[in-house]
Every structure is written in structure tokens, then in C-alpha cells.
Picture 1: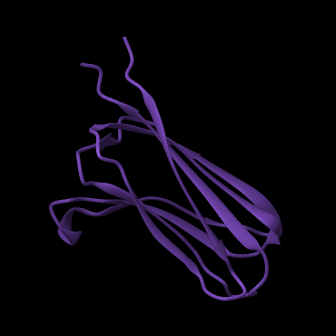
Picture 2: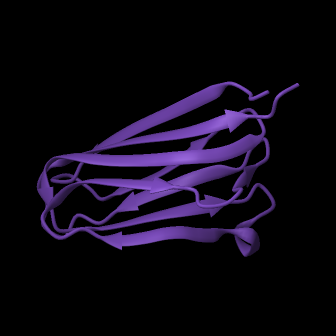
Length: 113
């Protein structure tokens, strides 16, 4: 059986600052998907990073994508990306062009108990 699906959300107006957000879950489980969408077509760089509770030596970039006049990006974990309690997923988006608002949703499945 599967566990529960949990979501975390964040947003950032790129006219005021770049997006750089850590989304943490209070459960262990596995990363499913990261959705990034924007209010306008962007030409910006998006980076998705696993941030370990054990420190920066264990952090791993999961995806790095340069959007070229695009408004959506979906990262789906291709293998098991295990999340322990207090690990986080960092999503960053540059604001080189300073326009639009970016919306992020991270979904994970909890361990089944």
C-alpha cells in the first residue's frame, strides 16, 4: 500500500527578488514531483536541490533547467529520492529579467505505516 501524498507550496514575485526556497516535510517518504509555473513566459534558470538534514556535504542537485520563454517546468523523480524527516527540497529561480511571479508545488509520498 502507499502512504499519503503531501504538498508544500511557495511563490515569489521575480520583480522583487529571485526565488530561493526550502520546502521541508515533517514526514519521511519519497519525492514525487516538483511543479514550477509562472504568470508569464520566463527566460530564467530553475534549480531543484535535495538538501540533507545532515548538512551541505550531502546536498545534491536533482535538476537544473534553463527556461527559454516557457511558463511551466515539471520535475518527476526518475528513481527513489528518499526524504527523511527534516530533509528539504530547495527550489531556486533566477530573476535576471525581473518579471513575473513563480509558483512552486512539491509533492511527496509518506512512508506507509
